[in-house]
Structure formats: C-alpha cells, structure tokens
Image (cartoon, rainbow, N blue to C red; front, side, top):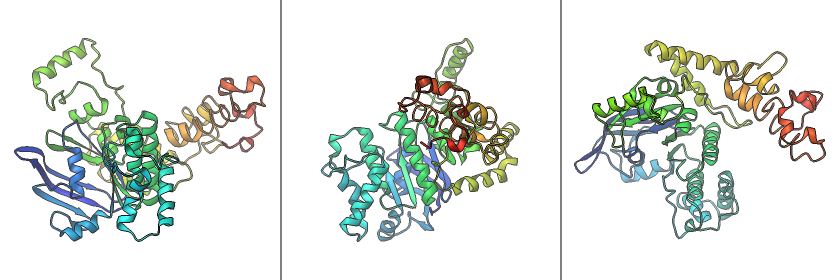
Length: 422
C-alpha cells in the first residue's frame, strides 16, 4: 500500500527567481493526484523536490513520517527506495539498452539473481508494450518508446509512491490513454500513492482522484477531483477548458486590458479556442475489468461527502449528481440485465448508462462499446471481431460495419450467454 506525502510551507527559488512559495498539500495514501499549471510554473521542480533532488529554502516534506528536509543522507537514500519516478524525458542511460536500463534499479537496490531480474524486467516491458525492443538503445527508438521504457523502469521495484512527469509527452492520444489505464491498474493492484504532472486536459478530468494547480508562484487549489472540476476559480476553469478567456496569458499573466479585449472578441462571436465547455463532472476512468476495485475511490468519496456542505450550492448539486451516478454504477442498467448486456440503447447511455449506471459501468465500457455494442450489436463482441470483418464464415449482411448497426445482439444469439467472448 502507498504512503502519505505531506508538504507544508514549501518555497523554492533559483537565485533571485522565486519558483513557488508557501505550497501546502497532502497526497492521500493510495490515491492518484494530478498537478496542473501553465508551462514554467515549477511543476517538475516540485516533483524533484519531493525526492530530494532539489532542496527548497523553506518548508517540510514528510514522507512516511520522515521529513526529508531534515533527515540524513543515509535516511534519504532509504526513503528514495519508496519512489518510482518517470521523468519527463525518460532519463534513460544512453549507453545501456532498454533491458539494462529497466534492470538497473533491481541491480542497484536488491540482491536478486539474474534470472529473477530477467523475469521482472520482461514483465514490465511487456506491460508498457515494449516486448521485442529490449535490446535497443535509447537513441534507436522514438521519444514515446523512451517514455514507456522509463515507466517500466519506474515500476520494477513495485514502489509505494509513483511520480509521473508529463506521461503524455511524446505519446499519441491513444497511447496516452493506454498509459493512463495502466497507471490506474497499477493503483488498483498495489494501492500506490501517485502524483502526475500533466497538461493533458482529458487526463486531468478523467484519471486522478485529486487535482491541484500551480499559478503565479502559488498553489491555487488542491483537493478531490469533484471540487476542482466544479470550481469557478478563473485560472482553474480556464485551464481545464483550454481557452484564452481568463487570467492565463502567453506569458504567465495578462493585464486587465488584454482580458477585456479578449472578452469583447468572444462576445462578438470570435472563436478563442479551447475545448467544449463541459458542465458537471466527467466520469472517472476505471481499472480494466478483472482488476481489483480501487479502494482510493471509496476513500475519496467519503472525504468529498464530509466537505460538501462547505462548497457553493451549484458545486454541491453537481457533486451530488456525480456521487449518485457513481452509486448507480453498481445497479442493473435495466430490468432483466446487469448493465453489461444491453448495448448502447438497451443498457448503455440512455437506459443504464451515463445517467443511471454511469458512463463507464453501464455505458461505454460495461454495456456499450465493448460488451453490448455500438448500436446494440457490439464493435468487439458482436461487430468487428465476432460478427464483423474477422468472422469470415458469417453472411455478408452479418459481417463488417453492417453488424454494428443491427438493432440487438439477440438477433444473432439466443441469449447473452451464447455470445462469443472476445
């Protein structure tokens, strides 16, 4: 299980340049947290401070009961064994192949035999999709592959605290989602405490249990995802929507005149960029089916319920709706079904999906795209793989994209249990 990391009154400068000041937060035990902020606000500096690579001028950093600002070098060396770190550029040794890079922490910190080390290394490389690349040097692979190799190395000691600096850097959107899913699966398995530094809005909205934001040399907010995603704090709202409207400018700050000018352009219909303004709280990603339930989710929700009365009325309403939907994920999507057999129309979005059983459990993952079908026929189960292009024995009208549009999976199978499992 992970350990708590408590930071209080932390201040860091480089010469006369102050990076951030009086930062106070607690990374809850076994939960996934994300730290957001514009470029240049010191997010990576904060990560390096947590493991003692950089030393702030003021404050305390308590890891598993030990203040690393006050401890000896020997104590710090032992504390660092609790951490697994994925640096922004992967930080691989250029003269070592991926196998030796991944094996390095095991050889440095354990007395395992080489056959044990090989088993662990190959398992972690497979986990991040690098099987077959173990003999390549970092200079022979892409930046995204180096990032994944760095993650494999960060995981070999099964750390209690995992720090991840820009996991989406150098990765395409699909592999970013895979990395996000992998991090949640790891959290479900070992209940590790995680801190992710990211600019990725989708990752920030759907992965972490807690979100914080650095801006103008201060920690603007830090707390459960439900609180941040319903916040009216201008900098937080602007960042999460990626728009020009707000206090963040091309340089870190903008003046009032520029803000008024941009607001006038927006009011006149000029597109100032950003994603669609999402109201409410987007559903959080779940571990892959078959993984243990993330205990962090229950701990966070209890904490949210305890503080909800202190929040604005609009936030309370949105959070309560989100909690009700999350509780509904465990209920059947519709009468006679368990939320995994009804497809998009019958057990997914409308009936038991987003509103009743949650987007993930009864909708997209549980009863929608994967299990019950895109339109009731199923991309994986009844569409592409089984009733689709790979099923060469099926009639033409039951294969290909035609299979995606059939009204119900039961047109092809007598009961849900008769369906092939992809």
